Length: 266
Length: 282
Image (cartoon, rainbow over the protein chains, first blue to last red):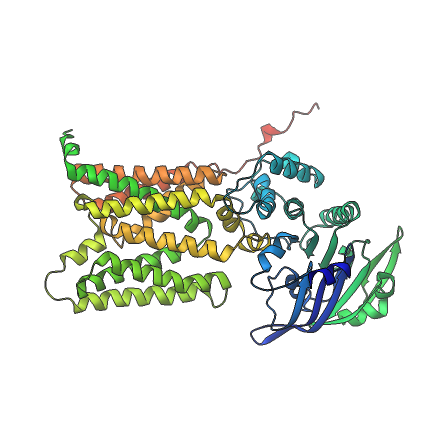
């Protein structure tokens, strides 16, 4: 099974997935394949099932029906911890207690724990990796600061460093720019783009905000009411009519410095 | 001040019990405070109390009853806490009141003198037995050893359970472990500290340490020191002022918390003052 999937170059394969939380069905018969090195954007309104889709990949979401293969392994209780160690995950901005006794450096180091296993403490090599990653995300000057003292944008950069510290084969980002100001949002998008381009990491990027979508997307998945409503190349999907139908609201697009900007019309 | 009392065996046992109890309670207290599960601690303490009274009532070792009850409750709360289903606060509230209800029923069913039962409620560190000391020693050593061995996993889980899970740490197992340790610590501290008071010795030292440091390692260390110091100050006060020792220990730990909160660097707000502004040339 593993060899078949790997030679196929398919990193994620979701087959007829159904997920429900009590009475609500979050995903209805969803199937999706992601190839190695691909950058897939997942967009859609709130409650469309985007987060549920992404959490199927790292096993935080629970399947009612269907099957999921990630990095050549079928997701099961036995395989999930092994898969999680190979998948970097950045969730949306968390509410961190400013008094939390954990430093920026220690948070980034949590990513290394996946590689270390039980009873082993981080060594010099791990500290070097974390140091380089904090440099990459521009946070090395704040390494010793308590994590709760950082701004939202800075915390998200640390979360990205933490996910990369896992040396992952896949990168999942779930609304990483939600509740950030426009500048922090732009910086995170540029960082994600840079990481994808330099490391060629297979990336799944979820956002409800069309303007927070990095322009490195190879493919867009449009989700609505727990289903994949459409998918295709960004230039085909990011059309006024399609987006207006997706969000059930009139959306207009404008060109600004070669980049498409999306506005709610009316 | 006549300190010859400290030469007696019972007082030396009490000093040792305060040391071991202080370390164990204050260490599990760090999890309880950081994970915001104070109410779970109260619930476990009352479960241990109800179990111990059942032991007295039915004539088996109260410690065994306390152990079974507190671990039973930990086993019920564990899945509730790790799955995030049901309203955790409400379910713990129901369990807590059930434990209190059972404790009172068992008390009501008891005939004859209720001295042993009351000692479980108030605790009596001055009459601590050799078995109590050995058990306290085993639990305190286990707690410290497990925290040292699984420090990085514990750190990840107290920071954020979902992130710990996402990097492949079995967060559920760590949480069960933490609840198990809390239950065991409460059980062995029941007889020296008392069912009603034990909870303060879990929360206060850790809460005081939380006020003073941004380092988790230092928080564990400070919490343990505060736990031990609370025990010893309480013992001394109990002797000097002839007050119940368990209660004196709790008051001492509360005072330490009060001082820590008062002088906490985390509470200081940097104030902007006019004189901070660079002087301008007019």
